[in-house]
Each structure stands twice: as structure tokens, then as C-alpha cells.
Amino acid sequence: MSSLPLADTSKPPSTSGLGHSLKQRQLTMMGLGSAIGAGLFLGSGKGLAVAGPAVLISYLAAGTLIILVMWALGEMAAANPNSGAFSVYAQKAMGPVAGSTVGWLWWLQLVVVIAAEALGAAALLVSVWPVVPVWALTLIFMVVFTAINLTSVKNYGEFEFWFALLKVGAIVLFLVFGALLLLGWLPGAQSPGLGNLVNNGGFAPNGLSGIATGLFVVVFAFGGTEIVAVAAAETADPKRSVAIAVRTVVWRILVFYIGSIFVIAAVLPWTSADLESPFAAVLNVAGIQWAGTAITLVAVAALLSALNANLYGASRMVYSLAERGEAPRVFARTTSRQVPLAAVAVSVSFGFAAVVLELLFPNQVLDALLNLVGSTCLIVWGIALVSQLILRRRADRDGTVLPLRMKAFPALTIFGLVLLAAIFAVGFFEEASRGQLFGTFTLVAGIAVVCALIQRLQRRQGTR
Image (cartoon, rainbow, N blue to C red):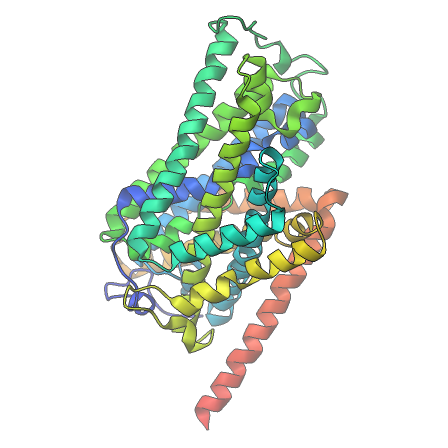
């Protein structure tokens, strides 16, 4: 086990070639932009269809988990801002194999998600603007966002700030229209009241099983917030920026998610056929005729914003791995604008490959990609919590002063791990998710074995 402390007062070696021009407001909006995606705008109806109105409990449980993960990551990132984030913290806590394993796992997850988001955004845009084929739009998106990520990090951060602000504005408007509809204050629209929360079988029509299944469905919607810990390394004042971002992101996500799901559950019966696009369905009930097209365009923006953030995160993770000798050194080289060019290029390569796959196998690629990475975020969150548990105890034992401390330690960290274990247990009991979980654990084991073998080979070569 590594004896490295949690806090690192020297300049982190993995950020030596990167800039520090990200602003605190950009860091905050990056966290929101990564988490608020098509999973909320288009996929929130799936959880409601499974659990009924009791999906609110599922969202509260998942939201509690991500708050605990963000607090844990915030504590570690403020003490040691590093582009490798939880990969570096896992290395400090559990050794180099654990660090490289979680780093490569997260990178592979993002590489696949980048391709899926480009394809998904193209497919949505084609549904309202059927002029350009999906594969061609996907190619355009990949070229544009690769170019954005090859500019300075300041330009990237500003672009992502306004993208995320668009999504936040759309949610705020939705909550306003939803509240006016439920209160009966919208002219020409009849309020459905709160009857849908208890009709059609009650608040929890499928019982605890439905709530548990809904929990496993909705937990992935919160994925992406961990990118705040990665981006902290390129802020001018990471200690202050991380503390503000963590506090801001967690409560805004809860308000936006819980508020939106409450409005949807109150307006639409959980048995409704319109749950495939729940935001548009609610606005249609409110008498807003352009709702469907508007929400589709917002969902396109949400996917592209997440693509932008995930490409940034993937490139910084492989950059950090290269800095630590866990990836080819070429990925640690930066341009005069302090951008890791090779790291960006390798992180977008699969996205361009997906363009070819979509051209060869139309409408078959997106679902296959999403099935590959469905539960990897849970592994990353679990390792982040375990790392914080170990490093915080080590810091307290050594008397290390931390700039940001997670409250109620270790009780809240342990509670987060118990909640995570419960989600895994639910997943293994459900046939629909069991295969995906087995696949994820097999992938993690495979990456760990390869990392261990490579590190053993490096040690042998170093002793010659």
C-alpha cells in the first residue's frame, strides 16, 4: 500500500504541462453539464414506468449517493488537485494497480459514451430535421468538438459554461410551467392536481421491487459529476473552486432532478404511453404546441454538452496515466496552448470509428454502445469512496490539515458504500441488469490483470 499522504503541497506532476485558466463558474457548470443530459430529458420516464410515482424515492436514494461521492471527491481534489483525480487517489490509497485500473476503466467508459452521445444527438436532430443522415451529422459533431478540445482549456470551459447554462435554463422554465400547470394558473390548461401520485395502483404500484428496480435505472442519470474532480487541476484556485463547485452542484442536481420528476409524476400517469419523452408530454398537457420540437433540441444540446465534457475528461485521464507511466508517454505531451494533443486524439478515435459503424449498421450501434458501459460508473464511485475512507484516516492519523473536510466521517462514507452495495445487490437480482453487471466485473478484472502484468514487466526491466 502506498504511503503517500492525501494532501500534496507541491505542484502535482500530472499537471505540469496543463494550464490553470478554468474559472470557478466554469467548473461548476461543467459538473452540472455532465450530469444533466439526455438521461434526464428523455430517459426519466423509464424509471417512472417501472416504479410508478415512488420513483421519487429512487431518485432521492441515487441523489444521496452522488452527494456523498461528490463530498468525498471534493475533499481529495481540494487537498491534491490532479487531472488523474480518483485514479491518483486510488493509487495513493490502494497502490498502483488500483489506480491504473480505475483510470483506464473510466477512460474506456468515456470513450464509448462520447461515441454514443454523438450518435444519439445526431439521431435526435434527424428526427426533427431529416436532411442529413445520422452518420454524417455524427461526423460533423465529432470534428467540431474535437476542434473545440484542441483549443485552450479556457475556450473549452467557456463553451461548456454556455452549453450547460442552456440546459439549466430549460429545466428552470420547465419547472415554472409545471408549477403553474399544477396550481391551475395556466390559461386554457386544466390542472391535473396531484391525483396521479396515488391513482393507478397507489404511490408505489409495484412495491419495494419497483422502487429497487427504479433505483438501478435512475442511478446512471447522475453519472458525469465526477468530472469536477478532474477539471479542478486546471483551475486557478482549486481549493476554493472545488469547495464551491461541490456545494453548488449537489443541491442544484437534486432540485433539478427531484423537481422535474415530481412534476412529471404529478402530470402524467405512470402508465402513460407518452413517458418516452416525458418533458415534451408535460408541456403538451400545458398547451404548449412547440414543446416536442423544443425539448428535442434541448436534448440534442444536452448530449453535445456531455460529449464535450466527457472528451475533456477522457483526454485528461489518459494524460495523467501517461504522466505516471501507465500509458505511452506521447499522451503526456502538450501543445503551446497547454492542450494534450495526442490524448485528445486517442480519446476521440472511437467516436470516429462509430461513424463508420453507423454507416455500415444503421440504427444498431447506439444501444450496443450503451450496454457496454452501463454500470462502470458505480465501480468508479465505489473506488472513490474507499479511497477517501483510507486517505482521510491516514491524514487524520498524521495530523494533515485538509482544506476541505467531509462531515460526519467515517459514518457518511460507510453509508455511501452500504448504499452502493445495495444497488449492486438489486442489480444482481434483476435479470435485465445481471448480465451487464457480470460483464462490468469481468471488464474490471481484465483491466486489473493487464495493469498488474505491465507493472511487473516494468519493474523487471527497471532492475536490469
